[in-house]
Length: 430
View 1: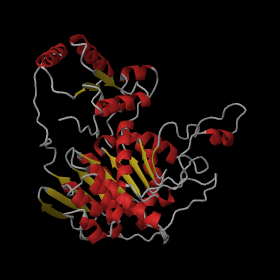
View 2 (view 1 turned 180 degrees about the horizontal axis):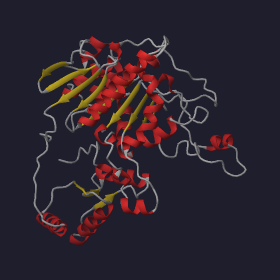
View 3 (view 1 turned 120 degrees about the vertical axis):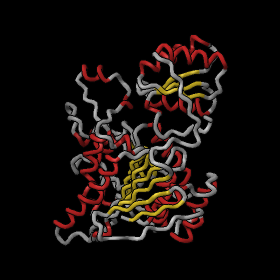
């Protein structure tokens, strides 16, 4: 284990053995260092400047070189420190290199999509935000259709029983597909796991060129006991209807199984690099990463034939901790109000509205039912307040419209369930 500390940044290296050491790449102090020290494409740096990224944040300065050198990474950094750009920049830089060397343009209908990167996030709202950031950072680099969001509408017929009188081939022809030149896919774990783990004849993807797997908000995505409140329906009603609610951890299992062979380097192929990012990293997530990314591939390599070209130094996992572990965000002023009962909370909210609340305002609740109650309470208190609520019951287009209206200042108060509790960046909120 190697330990280095620099300005509240702690980096530890795990490789399954105390006898093997490796030197970690040095952090960068400016985005220009990425070109000078690591050969980053000039368009990548121009795009960071256009997005007003003046200096790399702590998580960016350390994680970008680490990922560029193909170390697996578990990165923990406070909210609002630029984790999205930290994992997007190395991926987009590789896309720039591949586009310069030439991309295939004469695709056949039978050709499978060969993605370079898969980025997983828990909600459609966060997917859209990551996708938008990726487009901005890849201006002048990505071709139209190379960076996409995988939605439920894509390949909707895959894995379903054939309709009467229709062959699966005809069903596939009519389905909505991603562009053949797709290189970066942003998806939820459930949709990606389902499509990536289909039998070879049914899956629309060829994973041989997959170089990156990013799991954003990994603490919730890999907690085995976390039930997906993101579908945000009453769990009791789901149980009564016979619908089994899977945790994100369970949703990820088929995907991890389908890509496990990519964690081992083979002749002529780049090994898959896995990056996990979140504001909190529980011990169980770090243990999962050590087993799946280091211990398990090492054992397979020791037991395998000569087709692998991996050695022990290829299995390196870096744990990056920015700031104090489990500390609250220093940029957020927090205040706890004791209200005794649920009715007491509504009374306090009514008082806050009467005193005059600073807008825009986000209100989070743990269920759709409570969100509706608070929404009605606000409207009854003052019908002139521009309020709305968002939950998974609304359609994707309705949710997009609500989020857009809040960003544009057309909504004063947005009431949310866990759907927006992770990773969403509202610059209008202070």
